[in-house]
Length: 189
Image 1 (cartoon, rainbow, N blue to C red):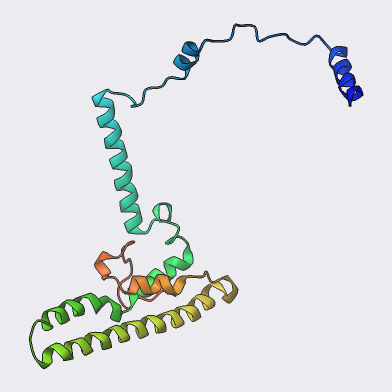
Image 2 (cartoon, rainbow, N blue to C red; image 1 turned 30 degrees about the vertical axis):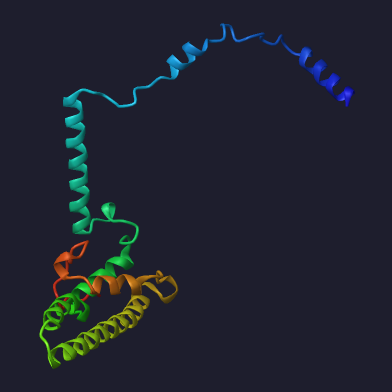
């Protein structure tokens, strides 16, 4: 082991002269801390802060409008791609039982305050309606599987399209994000 270290020392002295030191004194703690000091809060200039907030609000608004219009640049990873656009357009083109689920639940909620047989009947009605909505979502998933396989190829269908379609089908059409761009009955080809 001693020989190995000795060889390294000889190799180091054989080449050009090594620079000794760094050419300046070691900074004191005070100097080092002063060099690393940064303001905790950025510019305190009120006009600059106001301008920065305005620019950020403008960017957010542009992104929101782009996302609502279905612009691919502004969509999240869940909504991106031609298959997801196809699923959105297919769901938006049809009437979905799930869209009426929340209004139906509100009607049933009011009906449960009426004493007597109306209360019991309303509970059965809502459970039947929930069952219909789930069946509609299942059939939607089956149809979409066939349509996506025809359009994009069976081996290239992205996973998760059924859940994506069902969640979109259960939302009110005006509240969907990205907004519906096709009219009812205008199924994508």
